[in-house]
Image (cartoon, rainbow, N blue to C red; front, top):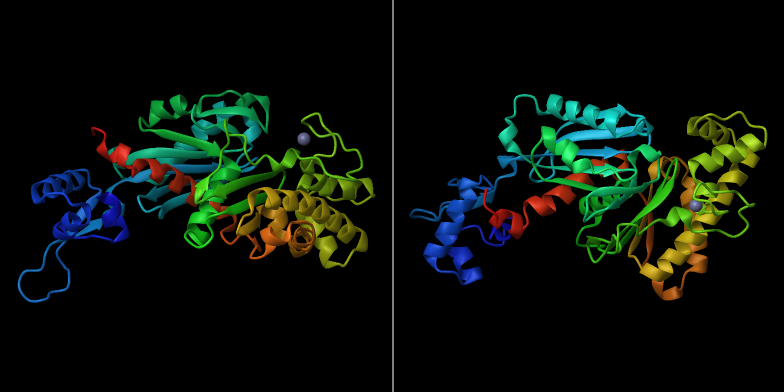
Length: 375
Ligand SMILES: [Zn+2]
């Protein structure tokens, strides 16, 4: 019933009765429950058609809030969103995630409290976090953190629940970004989407049939540790050689340039070299694009996505990387899988994590099971 009201399919008690086949008293009882839970409101401003118009029901996005945070290796976006995933307040902080959960989680929780301002705690429905680690989603526990060992095996929800006693949901940072990009830009038109984040690290999130694909334990989409051809024998921190992550990430691009004698500290230095038309820098980026493209081509053969979205600061900064990937994928993937394939740059940019976290949480908060559970 809530879904019918949210989507606008049925917004009066009579329409709901018609669509669901429920009796008038049954509809009335459920509507009262939804009103009590502040998930819907009555809107009497509907168009008058002569006589008293039936009361229209509307989803109440202001009936609660969710607390969300998207943590990257060095940045965090922290926000309070309404029940329609709209951002009410947001803070972007520089955070060294390697300082570990004991430092980072209290900072995130303090920021939520500041962002909440005068809003009563009773409005908070749930918490959602994206973390730069593989997450065993069902157990809501981080697993083999891609970052420092201090996060490995940490059960984050109990720590959060001490301060905010509401359900806590956790997912991998790239998964939440993929969810955000899909829901905000492609929902309904491209429900099979492969999102690839090329930043300090390389990771991916897979949307299949509109849902995030997590795999058996939450490790799906670890594209960064697929080996490439002609990588030069680089040892990856996972112990293998020539993983995509160790040859095409921002870290790898900087390392390659340094080994050729360039004094580059950050991506901004690389951007300056590209702007100046430096041929060797362009070669390094084209090389990264070639290796990224080969792995993406294989992923496209397996998944047959409608769209591949390239995000993360490397992809957002270097157009040649995106065109390089496009070229390789169209050459190496099967004809059928590339027939209608689009390869695009991320449209949401850094804000995608927040949007994705909010949707991940709201899918649960507004699910029939959660709505039907005792308050
Ligand atoms: Zn590796």
